[in-house]
Length: 458
Image (cartoon, rainbow, N blue to C red; front, side, top):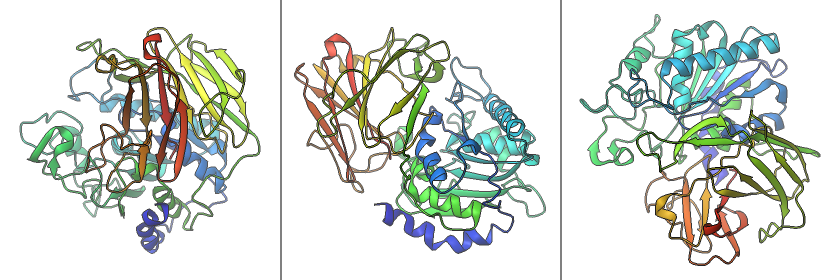
């Protein structure tokens, strides 16, 4: 799958290199600030940071931050609890960039953003002074021309092409009348036809059959180097090997040595325990994502058998986190699979199963689950999630407990999780397979407040 997805990026490398006359030297390694998307956290950049490190970019020059309220407002001009405006998002980024510049002692940084993060980057560069301190900007899957352009439909959203926000960002600038702000080197990465938020049809915004008036090329910008990555989905425009390959070439003018993380001899893991806010309109849903810490949450780590998910002994690490929600560092064993258990009042005890960690990371964020009303009838609940991409039946080879993934449609890459509701409380091994990756975990009784989460790392 990796080779197929990097073909187009590699074929267009000459175009990228031509745009890189002023690219930073690989000897200088300016700081890179990574900006996550709508409802996401900095943890999604984990594998990207591993790839940069494995190709020689110093770890202390790579920065990824959690925006406290990562979800956009429904209407950018109207305050909404638990959500952020474009102005608030820009202010957060500006403050973090200044912190990085002061700490690193540099004049300029590189910005790399996914999805809504691209809106924030563009706003900061155009309206927040970023054009003076940013050398390069890379936008993956950014809805630069909106997710929809429908007259009378939520035109106040920052995702509407008709919004004041996007109209202002896309207004012609500079001598060439570009959409991209002059003075910065720009790269956009988009899918050919597989980005759920760059579709002519309104299926993924709940309007199947209705034209969105937005094309597959919605993320492209006049004045930028615009690359197409064949077959990738919305998140893979930033987090896939193909996206890293194109980004590295754009920044350095050369091909990366490797597209996969090079294993560390010693591995230290840490991160934050993050919560789910309560939607004031639907307080029982528990699905209002934020990046606020859960003080007093407990994290316990067990080494497990990679084939079955069965624990290999007593806990290897066990702590209650402080007010900042930060857990770790935990010194992990190379090539060892782990179960990370997080528990907190008001949440299900969540058992997270992942593949062995190849490298150290401070971005192992843990978000305990809340049990939805629709899942209360299960005896055990196992959730398979792919944070850095979506499931695509027509593209991917995948099985969940030996069967097709429940809840994943037959066409389109727009669902990133699948729930397996088991009819028995008895604990047993459940395996997920995805494009050659296999992760096993154990089921736990739902009635006792336990949920299992198998998390893919690609």
